[in-house]
Amino acid sequence: MTPKIKVGFHLENKGHPQVDLRIPEKGNPGIGGTQFTTLATAYYLNQLYPDQLEILLLANHLELFPPSLSVCHAESLVDAAIKSEKEGCDIFIFKSAGGGDQIYDQLRKLKIKAVARSNNTPDRSKLNQIADCSQIKAHVCVGHEQLDLLRDHRVFPKSTRIFNPFNVEYFKPKTDIVKSGNTVVFVGNIIYSKGFHHLARVWKKIIQAKSDAKLVVIGSGQLYDRNQLLGKWGVAEEAYEAKWIRPFLSDENGNLLDSVNFLGLLGEEKIGILQQADVGVANPSGLTETFCSVAVEFQACGTPVVSGANGGLLDTVIHGKTGLLGHNDRDLVRNILYLLNNPSIAQQFGENGLKFVQEKFDYRENARQWLALFIDIDHDRLPQQPAMKPNYMYNAKFIRESMRIMKQFMPFLHPAPALIEIKPLLKTYLKKIK
Image (tube, rainbow, N blue to C red):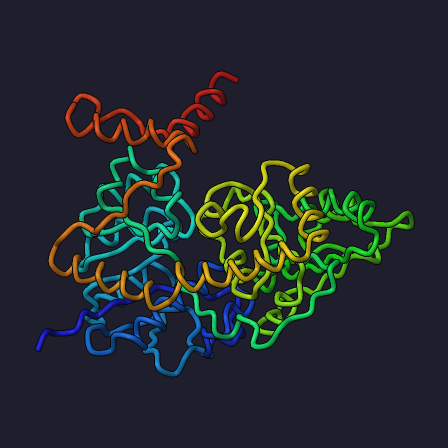
């Protein structure tokens, strides 16, 4: 009998120790997407492949996890790596953007194979650390666009793409939903990088064109840390609220507009709201998204998505079929109003979205790909890679791919920086000049 592969997943959960994570099938209960998808990946692998895998979750707090998961306390990422070896893990999975350089120094001292998982694309230093660390056998991107950004970087041979897992069962409507025709719902962390301010500053234009429009906001600046101090409205940090939210969503007396309702952080109770929404808005800029779980949640609920035509949204939304993706605030207004004013098209987009999520992001396919990766690592093989997406002009992919091929055959080009490295290098150079 082939021995099981033991895999340790590190989960940083010190910022939300009391959140109930016992039933991942119900979706994200109000924590960061990285944290939830780490848990969900470990959980479904444990459920689907108990004869081939042994899963261990290494976390700060061990309460309120699925009873079926084996858990182990780890105070930090470095501590988790050390304990994964002590617990007999063959492979250790960690968040590539966490832990500073200490994790790479520690991995070099351990006799364990590791996988760096990037819910956020690492900076130049960490990409090079991943490429250079022989203990790291694979680098997993959660989006295809994210993977394609790395084609000319030397981390690319180790890199592959595995989308985040999703289970539609609790999200898909069980009965026909009668929508109001005027409700826009935003879900996300209320911080600058998640782009809520784009929607806030155009909301008055939307209600000028459609006077009965309602905006429901699910989320808070406390998504990653329940102890984060919030501003006067209890929505986000005071600096963000004061500059980017209150000036645009206040009436002449400084009070919140009647058309806007902030609901804060929600767990499974948000699902009914997402199902009732006429339009779902996920990070209107799209600029920091490598996947965007919120967009997938909306579509699983049968609700069309409006967002930015950038990054992970190009993987998780089909423009003109499951939602509308734009490039600026004017597009944001136009796309929201188009779906509010054309309910039959919005309904068709919603139906398309549910089918799309079921076909592309199903947790069973996700688990199958992770299992295949673990088997490759166990046999000292590089990870399998999907072909480059055919939108060759986006983010200069054709240049990245051309440079990758040239570097293969022209050794003198190996030191040339990848495109993803050039922008920060230019910023550093300009700072020195100033």
